[in-house]
Image: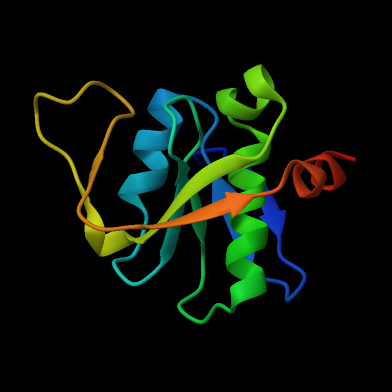
Length: 122
């Protein structure tokens, strides 16, 4: 069994996140095409995945905050973090990409506020 970071949204949706490049590979491998996925705009972030096909705006923001809280971007800059939100079907991988790296066809950008990340980390 692969160990991921886990979090439950306020509406009780399970969110999984990777802990390393290899763990991100394992996480992406189990994502369904219709599920929501998150990764920071900057490199050095877990991929985060809501394990539900029915999510709301708050679920998605909470998952983006979870992703941002464990990112190198937040660790290094201690400020707001831009997070990309996309569907599992938008992820691609070529043999030339290094471990833990993926391409994404289309995404939306969510700005996660520093204050929300700090609340999350408490």
